[in-house]
Figure 1 (cartoon, helix red, strand yellow):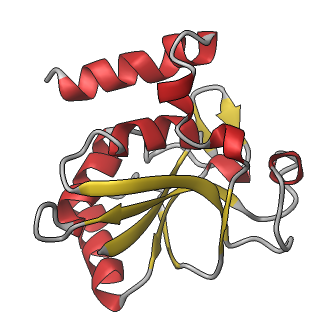
Figure 2 (cartoon, one colour; figure 1 turned 135 degrees about the vertical axis):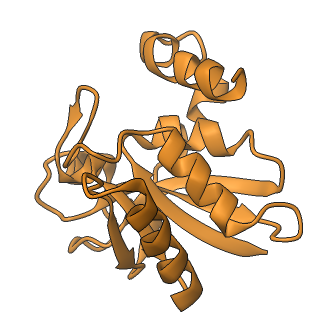
Length: 163
């Protein structure tokens, strides 16, 4: 198994997308690369901890390559807005690839270069990952009727998977 870490706004949206990709075996919402040890959602929402909302993606590289995951990541969020996805604003909602190998770093930088100069996605080595609270895990699947899920996540899933 391999792992990838992506931040693309609210982790509920990113989690829901990657749970539906063949070859992805597990997705965990969490926080990474900030200054607070074992942060909570309330901590990172202040925007002062330096953490990003991320998903840890565990995948079988024989079924899906990291490059494919990168392409899904860039196709399903706006990588041109700094510290914002829709109405979610703050450094915790930044666009980022947190790499765990030199190969992941190179692939991310190469794809960003192909996508153009207006991409603000940071490519940073993963320092530390903290799983989010249990109620954040598998959020869309457990809360599909919630207004946020209906207004933001469901249309994103429909758009990407019904292309």
